[in-house]
Length: 205
Ligand SMILES: [Fe+2]
Image (tube, rainbow, N blue to C red):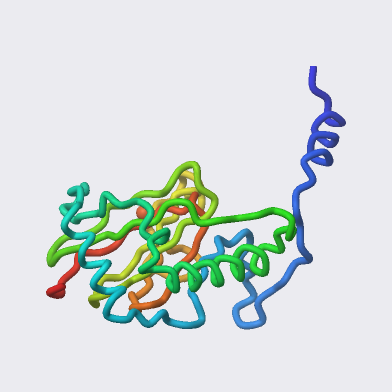
């Protein structure tokens, strides 16, 4: 039979990370256990040969669930044409991984797969997440008005006693989704457990 001590022991053994309670001074609400989403401080500026290489990937694609396309090449960042882009991604990845989470420096992280998505006019990217992965990433290359949406799938705010329809208006505490406008050249990094999607592209790209 399990005793209370057993659970205390289990709790001690698991060694949860904890931080001192930090209270917002603006609205008296502390938002606990956030999901850190990183946006690169700088934008990557693509040159013509990089854009040509990316466009060329359109010749060899697979049709995705929402009608958009993704390149069969799942290792584009290994191509010499995108050497500088890979360096930009790595620099931001290390900033997010080691500085953002205080990961020990002897734990190595590296980019594995990378591919190009083409969201032609009126196509979107379905809600999904990546398994067998620590960190996922999105970098907008071309186009506009195509925001990325992150979805709260881990918890229902008050269990099954209230639904999101009961809130008069969304705010930071009750939102089930967060949208970020795309900015070409900005890199997003986030835990791979986070569900995300990309809205319908309304521009001609
Ligand atoms: Fe994805």
